[in-house]
Structure formats: C-alpha cells, structure tokens
Length: 206
Length: 206
DNA sequence: TAGATTGTTAATCGATTAACAATC
DNA sequence: TAGATTGTTAATCGATTAACAATC
Image (cartoon, rainbow over all chains, first blue to last red; front, side):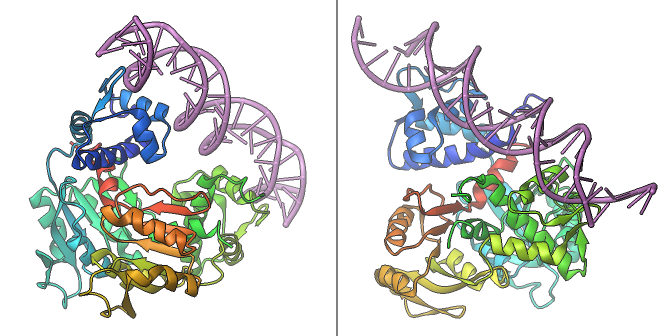
C-alpha cells in the first residue's frame, strides 16, 4: 500500500542510481552527493534528493551520502539482497545470448532454466543450462518457484508464452519479442526492443 | 526547428505505434482507429490521436486510420524509409548476438561493421561480418559514413569507445554497457540494460 | 564557526485526459 | 441520415525544479 504510492517512474530510476553507486564503490569512492550523482547521471540534484527521500533519510546535511550505505539501502528497497532465479523462454540467438550474459552476476539475478519447443534444441546445452521442452515449462517453473522470466521467442508466440508463464506463477516478465503483452495486473512486464530504440533516434537524423 | 518542438516522449511512442500497425498489416487488417490501437497498446485513445496529430491529419472522421497509409507516414517521419547501416563495437556475447539478430530486418537497420580489440577475435567471422580491429574503427566508420553504432563492450571501456564514435561522426548510439555516457548534445544515446529493468520489477516482488 | 548539503515545501512546468464540434 | 471517429481545446493530473530552513 505504502509501496504502491510511489510512482513507477521513480522506481525506474533507483536501479540507475544503484548502478552509479556500485561503480563508485568499485573505484573506492566513499562519499557522494546529489550534486555528484547529478553530474554523472544527468538527472537534477533536486530530483535525486526527492526520489531518495521517498524511502527514508539516507544522507547527512553538509556531507552527502555514504556510498556503501546508500547502495545497501537501495538493494534492500529493490529486493535484490537475494539472488533471483530467472527462466529464459526461447533458445534461439537472443535466448542463448541471455543464457551467456555476464551482466546479471552481482546484480541480483541468475538464469537457471531455459526452454524451447524445437526438438533439435531440446537436451542441448546453452551455457550452463540444458534446454528443456516448452511442453513441461509450466510445471517446471511452478515447481521451481521461479517468479521472473525473459521471453525470447518470435512475436507470434510471445502472448501464448506469456499466458503460460502467468499460469506458472511468474510475476515479472522481461519481453524481448516485439509485441505488447496482455497480462493480469499483478504481473509486471518490461520491454526490450532494440529496433524500436534505434527508430526513436533516426527521427533526429537526416 | 519545428521538429525540435515535439517532445521526445512522443517520438518514443511512434515506433511502438508503427510496430502495431505493421503487425496489423501482416494480419491483413486494412483499417484501425485510435480505440483499436488503444486496446492493443494500452495507451489512451486520446493520447494516440494527439500524438499523431502532431505530424499531420492521417485519419478520417467516422472511419479511423488506413493501416498501410499511416504506417507509411510513420516510417517517413522516423526516417526509416531507407536502410541505415549500423556499426557494432565489441564482438563478445552481446556484440555477436546483435550481429546475428534478425529483428533489424525490415525495420530500417542492418549491421555492416563489427569491431573488437582482442587479437584472438580480429579477422574471425561473426554472422556475415568480419571482426575488425578497434584501432581502425574511427577511420573505417568515418569513411563508410556510418551514423549509428551499438556499444557492447565492458563498462570500463564504454566511454572511451563513445568518444571515438563521436570522433568518427556517429550521431546515434545504442549503449548496452551499464554506464551513462557523456556525449555532445547533437549525439543521441539510448540505453539497454536488462539487469536494470529486472531490478525495477523486483521492487514489486516479495 | 563557516560552508556545504540535505530533506521538503511551494511553484512551475509538461504531459495526459476529457469533452466535443466537425465531418466522414 | 445516423453512427462513428477524428483533431483539438480546455481541464486535470502528475512530475520536475527552485528555494530554503535545518543541520552536519
């Protein structure tokens, strides 16, 4: 309830703040400020302070924010103190790339399941994972208690897969298929479509 | 000038409208309406009409929009009536996946160059492309007149690569490295970071 | 202490929605 | 014609910014 009150657009910025803080930590920087973060990220200092103040008082007047402390707080707020298991649906180029992707390590996620409906792929290894038959997906995901999935199947099948994921108890979907999905309102969906992003930029090109 | 006046947030929705229209076309649908698009995409009908009206009068009262005509108009507005060449920097897992990605076909883009600084990778084939030495990147991109690039190198090197791309005349960058880039204001940057997107959703999970 | 920076309120800015005349 | 849907204006809603007292 209290959570619901915080605008989604603010939630979306928290991981970006966290990413910057973690880079500061790596670089040995102990203290930062809204001004410092603003210079790095391009958001206004006022906005950064306001966003953070939604969740508590993390800073110190005159000093700023302790990098490690703030980053710990943000990880707690975002629920990534644990490592979440993630299922991948589709073992084509995109699904395989996600299975190999090293960017999830230390950011709260690990791919533990991958599915495909192509008999030629089922049983094959992709990274550390063995491709399983989509026919067993609902049961396998439900039994494993996996709550997050990434869809990397052709656009025509994405909605069907989404329906199955919902049935399996998945609550968060990262969709790489270039279609809008229709899901119950307690299921969250984020979209990644590089062509769409490039098209946004070509508008400005000549 | 007139272009600059249109909010970026509207430009970002145009490719999504286009994506839906192209799926309608494939399905043989001739006519749509703001209400129909709204049902598919989740944006309000009023917003869709208002967005489109920024660029002209594409519809007909009482009828709606002709799918093929509107999609043609949007392609023109977004400057994707041509096919844009795109350079990929980094031939690791992400770069390779982008080189193989089939989602760019018919959406206005083709990868034509790929670069890496690892001698073990230079000269190797990735998809149709041969990996070239990053040392020659600035010159090669400039000579080829390529204006769009995707960065798929480790975070530590992304800014350096971005600087080189700017020097080479690139005006649009799709950045897969999990860092904010600093570029001149006539250069456009979009970010794709799946971990960030997943973290946004885990906020809502328990 | 003096300087710096937070957290927060009020003011501004911009985006979305509702409503409806125009018209196909 | 009657019904439907556009394009657009005005009203609403929400997000960002400016400013500053509190305080480290």
